[in-house]
Length: 286
Length: 254
Image 1: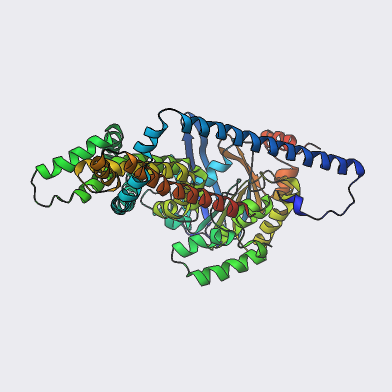
Image 2: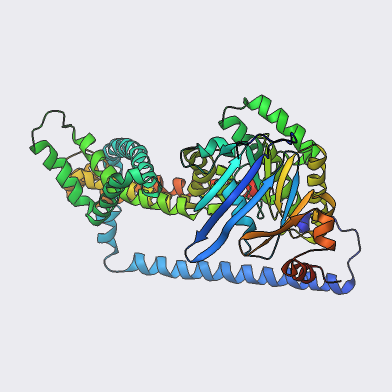
């Protein structure tokens, strides 16, 4: 893999030296072309956009610095709620997803009724628009006026997100568990480990590693969908941006919120890339 | 089966009695009988599809028999009421494709079962595992992951993993079939050493020379039954069944 770093124990021939020189020259030429063309294209685009007749209005409506500054504290406060909601929902979703996946892959015949419940649940959860679920749970549940039903909109919002995303994550987990080769089950069981022990220590670690990318996808999507809970009146980032935006009829606060969502998502994606890479390196003993 | 034995021969450690197993229409085992005494090494030979692997998987309870009985240490382990996990703790198995756990280091592969089954604490399990790894020439591979090992090293690690549970019986399913020819020897040497220590081994193999050298007995499987069994010299040099002779000619043409 890294043979290039090994010191040479021979003197390269003139022919080889000439080849190396040509390769270096070629890669220099290519970088120069790439750099200049990028600068030129983006430069032209920037000039075209800024000098376009409507640019002033676009800048005023979406990228107003004063608006951004004045709305930032409230939006930041909203993000506090967003992040809380997201983190709690993520844990709940993982638990629900794993439990449903376990029920669906378990061979025990006694679980048949539970399996049916799990199948119906995933179908319903994945088939219903999340916004609709948020309405149903957020407004519908309290309307029952039953004892013990939570009335906090924050809790109801998390409940709705968990219900909706649990179905997706359960299917991702199930796919991961089933992708582990049966011989891994066989060798775990042949050592005397029980079904549960083999699942926990042998199959699940391999399954989760494989489904990490789609799992992160679901969680990035969840992070954005926390904004749906705004319809219940929970003061999270999107709601805060909406309120700020309505005050001056300016859309800059929404752009500020959008940037905030992006800033939240990117590190998670990079972190999981790094996790996956580290796992591969370790297994291959590099 | 309960009659007292006159010649005081110890009861067999493993006894298969008219074992049947089919997959769909495919009758793999058709009333197979086989016995294995303690400290004995029995080699199963026969063509692909003759039922060698299925037989081993039935003994390890990875497959349920369709009929017949598997006796292990005088206990009917083919009874569905038997705790299969408990039986498997006493019967080690090594597979053709190694089947090591790729997400764990070699050391963790070996210590996982002893630790999780409460046989030993981490420290105790690890020192026992290090001892075994050293014996099988893997002392410097303890912290490596399986994918960075050669085939021969992986198979020896799989062997150590099975041995860490201190099984009374070891099942080896064509454990050299996936190896490069020059790596077969190191694995077979390890088996020879285990035999010298008195391990009871039932192995499916294509290594006829090894079966002759190390096997106490050789059983030729054909169409789901043991067609012929006996001392290696008898089976290899003067088989009584024409089908045995034909098989031996095919695998070792002279």
